[in-house]
Image 1 (spheres, rainbow, N blue to C red):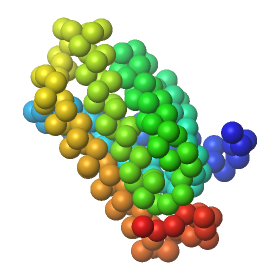
Image 2: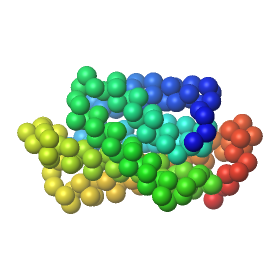
Image 3: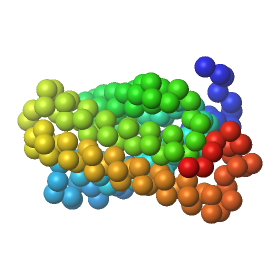
Length: 186
């Protein structure tokens, strides 16, 4: 893996700060939704925007894990189990992204793989709660509702990521500014 540049570290630090701020706000909004995974449903579009921006800037597989790892330290004061779910989902998303595409070659690669993190977060949360915290008030209903919510969150995240790329293109912020000459629009 290539050495991470200072500019990339700065972008990642800004992403973590945004995740902490937006996550705090959206956590409370999402907990009012009467469906399993409501908090993740509220946070998925915002986190998709953030991860898409970072991937557009760095074009590195593994960045989601790195950002989620740092983000997890901010959440340790709430629950070690939630942090384990976040870390596991980010790691699984990056591993599957690496297996599927090896490298970001197009915007389509970005908006199809960014949602994997949100998809896996539903499942890792489900598994962690079921096996480690069965008396939790956040227990998800069952396997089929969890599957439905995870698919819904994948598509919400995908369209959020796709919209962000489109928005950046309309604002002429893609291309030379992000050094995306090797990425092609799909």
